[in-house]
Picture 1 (cartoon, rainbow over the protein chains, first blue to last red):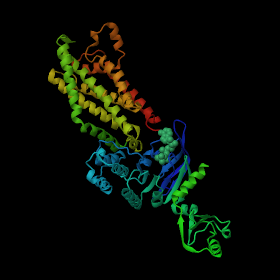
Picture 2: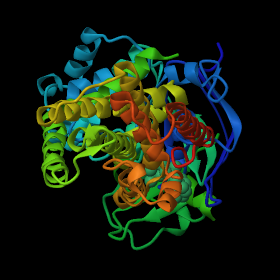
Picture 3: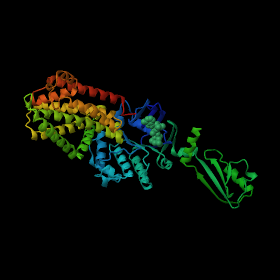
Picture 4: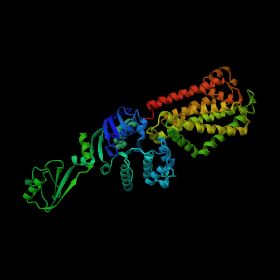
Length: 309
Length: 253
Ligand SMILES: Nc1ncnc2c1ncn2[C@@H]1O[C@H](COP(=O)(O)OP(=O)(O)OP(=O)(O)O)[C@@H](O)[C@H]1O
Ligand SMILES: [Mg+2]
């Protein structure tokens, strides 16, 4: 099946001459969740705004469900729901009316059951007759999500959906996203919380300075770039690394009570067996052994700083 | 045509009007009454009749036009500026709508509000003076076209404005003088010949003249020319807005 979202060599140069997108290529399959990961100013919002019709691309093409975002913008935009990064809501408008408006704006006939359902789903039903300015920040964000879903889009863009949202609510948001995925909605989200991408996304696209550095299955990414650290806790402290263990990528803790060995999980020989044999030969007594996996965050920081050099 | 989207924009704009319906009506009623006290009673007692019409009645069309023009501009410019200012306009930009639909929604609502207020003023005025309308259809047509034309102008101002000061600038510096000097409260025949010629350069004169003709069948310029002037003005505004939407000027980055 053709990807639901196809981006080809998309470029955006802002009026001042700043090139915010430098030829983005990206395919997204229907029903998947893609996390756009990148530091401040990477171009995440610019990419989303361009796909949604808020900014005009300088060159390149993109299609949504096969419809070109420029030549067939009506049908392309009908497929898309957008939750912007900033909370943009008219303060004096009413919550319920806001959702009805969004649905109408996208050319769908009024549907009370659907809007009420969304309000309930995002715990806003009690507030439906309140003005937006009477809501808390987290509630406003949920109003925005409700608005974005009011016209039943196939593709949902979430630009930092959990910025400024408390831990409990963030969990709710993750659940809501998982539920939407079950309903078949394709989701593209941006986030600075790495654990969020790890928890939710099927794939991760790393973007920096307007370029996509890599797109990878979340699990594969972990494997491909993931390094593990083997920590050996010792019964007796060591003054230094014994000569018998020289030439290995070992680090001794300042207190001399643990050795850590970092290795590549994708390498054919991790060198663990050899290390253990030499430890035994050197007569070092072990207390415990543990391994830790590097998180996506560490991978990400690595990648970004590597690229920066 | 995305009729549902036009309706949504239109109703959303109107809801802002209904939320403040009291203010929307009270202030024009009060200001009209004040005009009658000042112009009708104080000045009117010195000017008996203008072109066979009592001065009190003579100023009614000008008074209605004055408010309708100002209201159309301020409603439309605010209507489009406010969502740009609060950022909610992103939704319209991301919606499957074209420029005509956005325009119909916003400008239609602004013109409707102005029309309402124009009628309220007419009603208030009829309490003070006896008003006869010679050509009711022409009267309504002129009123409608004026509302539309100036709502379009307001729409342009709202897109152009980068802050609230600029939003006030054009109405204050350009439109108010043109309206006051466009024969709202006098007939050009009362002016010296030189100024009569100068006034003919004022586009608002043609509107007020045509509108007044619909009431009393007296006009500064022929009605046909008044109509032509409005259509010309409408076309210019639509042309400018079409260009704005095409280029995305001040709307899309
Ligand atoms: N309207 C604009 N005019 C000029 N430059 C802009 C405009 N909007 C964004 N930029 C620039 O484009 C670059 C990318 O911005 P963008 O908002 O897409 O980043 P982002 O990845 O969303 O960042 P963040 O994580 O902080 O939200 C930045 O350098 C920014 O300064
Ligand atoms: Mg952003």
